[in-house]
Structures are given as C-alpha cells and as structure tokens.
Image (tube, rainbow, N blue to C red):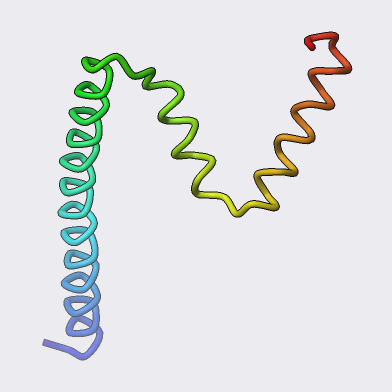
Length: 84
C-alpha cells in the first residue's frame, strides 16, 4: 500500500466517524423532539395554549434587551398598521 492510499483510507475512516456521530446525534435529537411534543401534548390536555408556551420559550432564550427591542419594533409596526 502506498502512502497516498493510506492517507485516503485514514481520511475515509475519519469521515465515516463524523457521519456516524452526526447520525447518532440526529437520532437523539428526534427522540428529544418527540419528548417535547409529548410534554406539549400533556400541557394542551391540561388546557394550556401550546402556541403561547412555544412563544414564551422562544422569548426566554433572548436576553432582556433583545426582547424589549423586539417588542418595541413589533409595537411600532402594529401601530403603523392600525392594529392597536
């Protein structure tokens, strides 16, 4: 086996490892997404609005200044469209 073929084999093995790791993570992600769906279904069954819950989760990921800026822009746009 020449040196180029050895390097190609190592690169192919490494690439395969990366792909397999990503595939495992995708499987874990799908399982977690299923768990989240189950929790939202449970909340909905108890009478909670899941759209509002998703919005709150999205907003909680942002820092206070970013959230205030977004709310301010939204309020300005709504006002400009006569939605108040």
